[in-house]
Image (cartoon, rainbow, N blue to C red; front, side, top):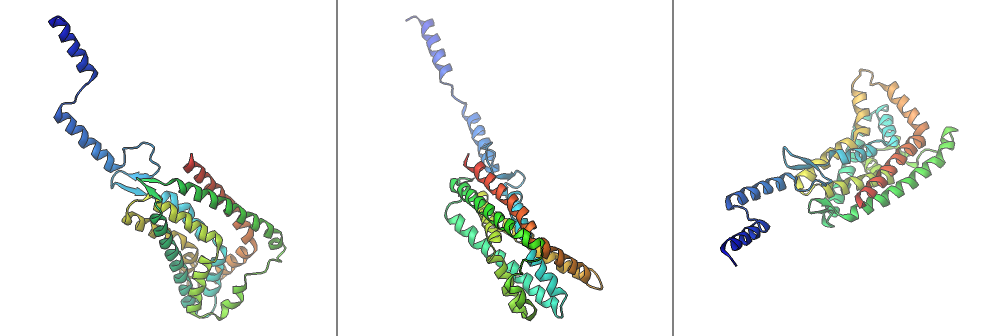
Length: 279
């Protein structure tokens, strides 16, 4: 083989096997490392990344579920009734404390359980998270159907109130606090939405600090239904008693319709989120 042919062969081989200059390769590795820290290594990442702080934001995904817990007509009725009775401020505050504690305790336990089961895998939600949301969505549709069956009786004024309503006037502040916890843990809609919120937080936030921040936001939003009447009661010299009574009467008549619409929307969202997670 001639010298010129050997030179051409060596040049072709070099072109087929390019090598980076060591300083250049080092800079490329540094840039890749920075992108990985910011969460930019995967354009299909489902988590909401905050490029300024490098943290995963879950406020958007959990907002709907926290508001769904807050939309609970009977809790609004309880606070409105307590505030219009003697000694109602202390008893209603105890009920609010019990409600908030119930939401916080259940959410914390479920976040820990979901984290232990590996809800977050390498920065992405695990596959089983999608199945959980899909199954809960189907269950929520069943709850909506049950509320639809109650609507005719509610329109005619024949729907009896819950049994605990008769106990409400005689409850002490401690009893009101227990009732707040009971209305959180004993309601399937509230439990399902707290569970979905916990799954979402555990699957989208790999760090303990981010999970704690998201949980605090969830608890605050989920407690709006019991906090708003307290604010309304304190915002006027006469306590806005007429306003609270109007709220109570309207919610009592329309509770099944409100819950039917809410549960139908929540079921559709959970099913859609589950399918999107699995595909």
